[in-house]
Image 1 (cartoon, rainbow, N blue to C red):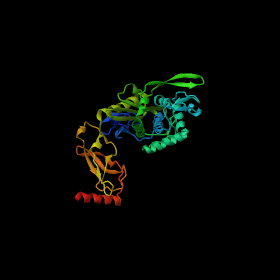
Image 2 (image 1 turned 90 degrees about the vertical axis):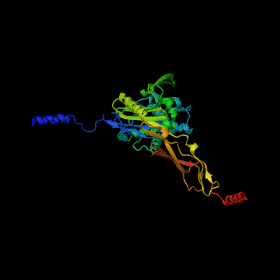
Image 3 (image 1 turned 60 degrees about the horizontal axis):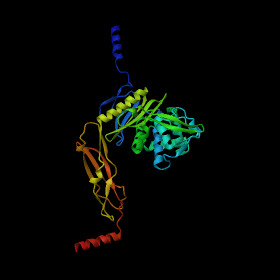
Image 4 (image 1 turned 120 degrees about the vertical axis):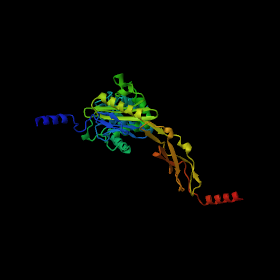
Length: 396
């Protein structure tokens, strides 16, 4: 009996007990990437397709990758002309009091919006982030409300922000996000505001402090080590605290494909970079993108009943994109164009009038809407009379 007991203990010692954090997480195509981070995801930017996931919706402490949303709102404010890159930003005492990563802005010091973006993107500066929040919304609290509204708009179901920096965040305080949600706001930033890359890929830069003591140069060094060597890198943002461990949203572009790799709660700073790099490498090696930017040339006018015109000009409602996760001849993709046969006036520009379906290997891989390219007004009595006269003269 004693020998049997020892044998059982020996067998049990080599059996897996529960899920190992270092276990391989499976990706969408059935392969595997070894990830030790608690949560990770890889998506493609134009399609949003998930190529890899590991506990992608787990709510975790995001640390400074919070600032991805802060940057989204900054660039939205620039696009709407609310602020410009040349505008001056005055630093409040509250903003200057931020700890953690900072560029040591002093109360009443001024910097341009452009330099504040550099500080946030390159050096992950908490003081600059709060100063920009106050510039745009009047207070950090009001800015955070906008952050949460934007999160809902993007479908970030596992995120709630309590500040614009990620400083001293914790689940109990209600400041949390998930790897997939971070990927969604990263996708928004790099696709809607690609100019972020001119900041987030800079390895080293400087700003000039202008205070009562005079002018001094302050060096900025990028916290994202991948910008030094990764081919096609476009950004984006690191984050780390004792609670969050090591987080990274890494973005890169090759062959018209934008990939976003997010790792959260990696055990050390080296792992977050190596594992994000592995995810990006996997995506670029095993995936290719098909898009159809020239679909408009294949469209024709669609018939309309009861309108001042008998047909309406058409245009694609969007550009179709699809990710293939295996070796594919994209030249064999076919499309089927269908127009609605019951279109009636009045018809507004942008209204759906048909669909384009895309097929590969006899299977539908997706579709886009065809929309009206103009307004079609409903025909009146005079239109019908004119039409009848024209038909009469045509017969004569």
